[in-house]
Length: 289
Image (cartoon, rainbow, N blue to C red; front, side):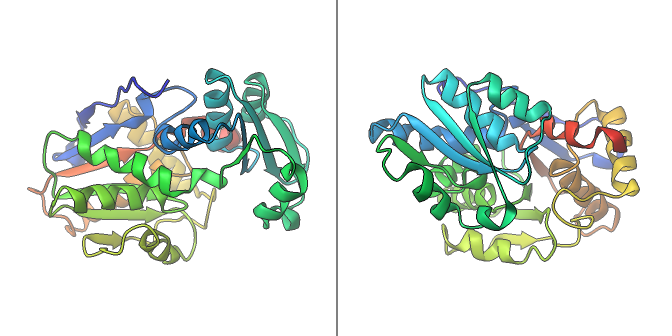
């Protein structure tokens, strides 16, 4: 299922973004979308090599990672279980998870913090169970995300990505270093106090010379938004035809726009934005549009 890949690079047709291109990882798959496809590729290969047929992972009630894992497991003939943070709820995302055959275990927020303990408590005796961290964060995920750089047929002055765990960014930086590029990697943490993302990236690659963090575009924190951000989403999508989500990609594109307007990035410099998918997350904020 991970052999076919459709992720073209497209130029945005909008005046403010004369030199902006987008790597359309959102087009890879409707459910195993964007960086989720990249992260799960080698995680599933490892599970197969270890003869494990039960994927166990973690996420919130509107987690794109849970949907992606459920879909990937179903297509691969594997079982899947997710510990869902918080009280028991029903929504569009969890419905998709269940339709793909995923078992959901709703977990209070205190217990959820110790994921290893939860896994041990429920699956210690299940030798077929494969632990997958929240968001797919792992060395295997970094390898999968590094392949984004290998696929590029052009050279860019700047590459941008949004970050939650830093796994995708670590993969991109690893790809940049491996290919001996001078490209600057701009990472936009979507959480408050996102400086820790650099430490997370450093766990996988020590050479962070080309890394630039932009920590002022979180709009209040993870999954937090403002009317200004929603206004940007609606105007951006209407002008470009490119759908972006409120949690990740909208904050990245807002940052790019702001850096262009402030002339932090020069007009003649070439920019590539990584569209990491996650568009199903829009359903969690329908009432705000």
